[in-house]
Length: 420
Image (cartoon, rainbow, N blue to C red; front, side, top):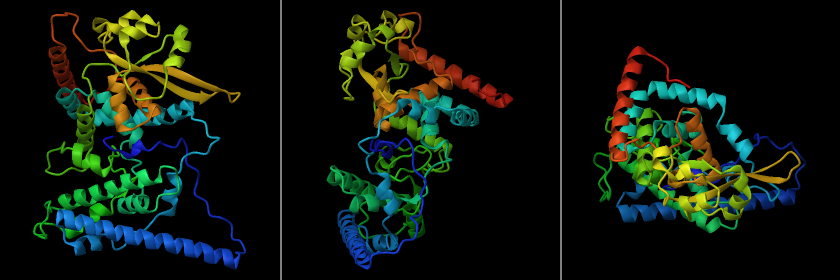
């Protein structure tokens, strides 16, 4: 994702936070727990201070400014629980996942968001090639257009996961990942506050209050920020100023969020005018099952999949909504338990644009949900090329997009709603 938090596997449901009933504590056990907690906090503080010193040295930022910004930083025990992997008995359930995200409330909110931003969405689609429906779908699935952006302080989240990650087999790799994100947050907030990098121990022009506000902004339990839930590294690398006000605000500016999602997708290889996925033919499910290995790699040509009966000939024909026969694809398996608890799966053929969405959030469930959410908003999951084979696809796309912008402007002026 870039590195994105959504890059952590999204839990299908989160339990309510409840307090344990009051018990008569074993005094010895209480002392052990207090000692463990004290040791964790001591390591946390030591490691955080070491990172601040490192950033101060490498970026020449005055250490007191960093120490002040993190003076009240703290670990959040509930965060450590939220990032734990599911239990061994947990079964992934595509049907439950889809029902949670491709549902009437989000779709209704998506149509409203599109109506409110239709001109800018059309312009963004023209400039980047990323369909408006896909952009709207991503923001809708991520936060319901800003309704659910998280309620944890981002500096607490990232420092907790960087220096107090739970004991899991991948603990070392995860801690390094979040340590990197914490450094990215510091650099992001420093520049957002008007500072330069490297700072050369000069804070002239840097607004300390804005620096601290940035460090204290809300995020998800994994440190993702704003309407599109970007991690700090993705904000620094891919976020853009969509509304032209001279700053990037993914929390309050829909235009910044829209432009940033589109830029991320474009930079990660989105192919304009191409579909996201194809359904697998019913009589080829067994064959698809054999080819589904879970690896996010484009391994098979569309021509090969047509030959195996997984796809039909028109899906290898640009003039009939397909793609080039030599385009690469992969088999996607989306598991779920049936009513008897037996393992089942739905199968799809993922194309290049499917893997681009996976770069945003490393989950097949997520990418397929984005595609189906976009379709529910009116996205045509097929190639957008002219009937006349002599016309270049890009020219047709430009003509189509210009038509969309004109239509959007007329619709906006007349206050018409976008059709379902």
